[in-house]
Length: 196
Image (tube, rainbow, N blue to C red):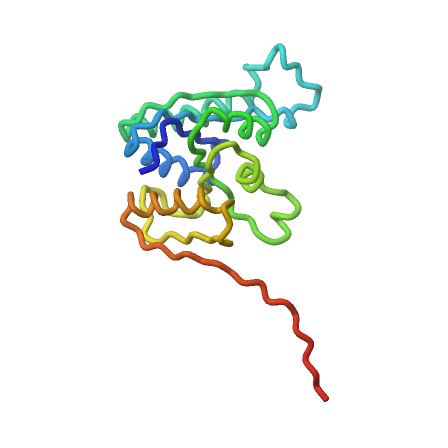
């Protein structure tokens, strides 16, 4: 299996992160990786300008982050996985992407919003996938918890850009003895049809 030595679990304490946390802890147990639970004390929650030199560790937002990371630490202890809690203050997207430079894998949850909700709110997970320095595994919050993969879909356009994703997908499939489907989609251009 691809050696994941350091795994990062971003969490905000919501139920949407629970399945990702369970999966990541299971991966940590299998690989022996160091696991870090990261919660970002979001500065956009503050009505007054944020002072980077003096983070407000007594604020309800900071305390919520401490509780969120402690939950991951406790779950890790139940599974026999040591977890390092990390609370930082900043913009969640920026802090997660910046932290990605120091990890081999990010496992994060998402609410699985679609349509107008996704367009209006955007998706931190979607942007982390695009800009992180390491592979990102996103698990929808409505998925059952646990470490199991039975079927893996690997989309590819045949270019070198997808090679790393293919390698990771195949290694995951080998680790879980999962069925693999490789998907490549050909673009079909509109062809005018004569009716006369």
